[in-house]
Length: 528
Image (tube, rainbow, N blue to C red; front, side):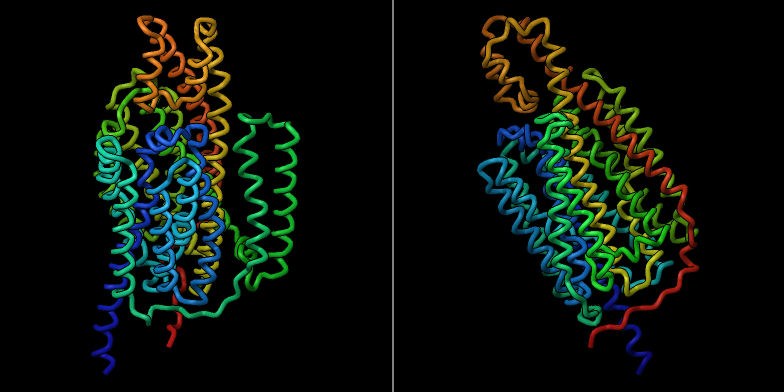
């Protein structure tokens, strides 16, 4: 009887793994669908001043939701949670697709973040339930391969759709994929894989942490651009954030048995270092994605389609590097060298970004994309596996939830911080680059170039050019001044990102590695 049941169990496990892969593919779609076309979206909705807010709100919603989904997954089962997450992603993308302005668009992105925030924690926890530690590397590598495959076609497809039709269709198409993923989870993941562990949801901790995160993110987004860092508005918001954060930590320590953030797990040195690596590395992922795209379109003057085509070889290479990384981790049972290599390479890449200019050739874009993919692209899959190596199976829900809360918080902090650096630097740089021609510009022209929207919106460029009439020379000087100001402000962003990446190098060096084949493993008890 047992001999007949083993093959059936293995078959169910394989189909469940396939469903997880489909769900991870849907997740990578929601993460990357707007990267190449965000300048187009912000320009179309007249929202360049809020260029980073969509990403910031997505990650804010994600960081708040991630530990909640971890707890709810322990309570209801990961299969049910996965279905809920994909449903939220679908609803969010539909709202964004129909958005009449940048504000509604950001709300839709935030709804999508409520679902996307729990996806990685949930499907990695599912992998932890299904496979022993020394077998997870190849599945993590497979997920990374899927993200690379997505990176091949997604940017160029979204760019073509946005430039030839409308960016709104991109969000409709992703909804179709989410629905397919929902069906796959329902039909391919058996109930026997549901943990069913009872758990309390930490609503008080959620409220306290939200009240700390929101004013903090708004403060660092406005500081340096809308307000000075020493302005009372900024100081008050930061003070409120600190008060709520302290209250949250005190509350979480007193309720460790069901805390939103597991203070108990954070006391484990290696686990905490793994989380900090992920937190700091998010800076380079944000800079190389959101802000390098703006550099290519705004400073270099390349179309979204051209830039995504130039980056396509990197995505192709990423398929093989993802599999190779998973294979090496699976065979060697070692991961520390990967944790050191990625942030070190990220720092070098940020330095190289600072050498770019409007005249930079497309081959440079291709080379940077390849380097970024090979040396840092594997981190979203490998780093969680390194963190999970420090956890017991019954801790996967809380442990992954805590990790993705902190990582997603970084995903909110960096767009807000970099957006503040960008807007503040742009204003001061524009004043310098237009100093010699400012008296020749009309108030309407000065207003038009007050944001870099003009560089990424063809209609605005035509309108600006028309306002100069036959004075082509002054028009060219103005455009060059705007482009130089944007270049200077983006390079400030790359410098800040490189500094954070160095912090990740330090954290990786401090980790005491435990080989994967030396970690005790037992499959969690299934719900009957």
